[in-house]
Image 1: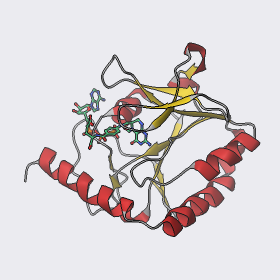
Image 2: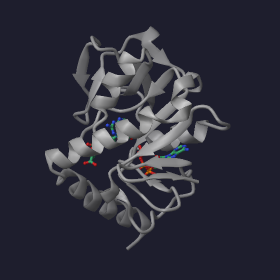
Image 3: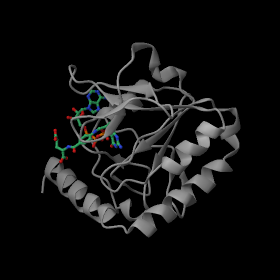
Image 4: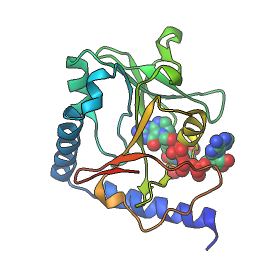
Length: 194
Ligand SMILES: Nc1nc2c(c(=O)[nH]1)N(C=O)[C@@H](CNc1ccc(C(=O)N[C@@H](CCC(=O)O)C(=O)O)cc1)CN2
Ligand SMILES: Nc1ncnc2c1ncn2[C@@H]1O[C@H](COP(=O)(O)OP(=O)(O)OP(=O)(O)O)[C@@H](O)[C@H]1O
């Protein structure tokens, strides 16, 4: 099987697995990741935090989002550009932000120019992924949105941490020239760092 087909096949397999998790498994996973991040020593000094609104069986960050709001942190979520194919921005997400569904069926805030943040201004990005391996390689949904974001980051800021269920780990992600491995991945049972 050539690499694009293999990547497509792996995406399908792992997406099915995470969608098959029960509501109990999902909420235990959310709580485990919340507890881990609440005790993350670096979080105290972080203000602007980008994360995602879960769909398709992804690890649900709603409990974390509620807690970050209580901590007066600034929460940002992805907004995919309707016009420019492949562009993704991070938009402020507040308890009362007007929301809509994007073309993938993912909830996102209604665009407001002054609510978009430059990615260099973010302290932390919690990145979704479909599959990962023990080397920190990441396979996403296939849009290349986070690949392009990772390509723009050089240096320490923002810190990017991948989030996934344990069942999303695979033996080996077939990597492409543009893929940059993650330095940290958190699952409900383990925190990986490289
Ligand atoms: N929660 C969440 N938000 C996110 C992402 C994510 O992975 N998770 N993204 C991370 O990049 C971006 C959206 N990327 C996506 C890329 C492809 C598909 C998707 O469903 N593709 C279809 C086929 C293509 C189409 O319908 O146009 C599919 O695979 O079935 C969804 C989201 C931004 N927001
Ligand atoms: N740094 C980059 N610059 C320009 N194009 C890129 C870059 N990284 C990836 N792409 C493009 O994005 C497309 C999708 O890449 P890939 O299949 O690796 O996505 P993915 O990692 O699964 O998705 P995502 O990052 O959105 O979660 C590829 O066709 C590739 O050409």
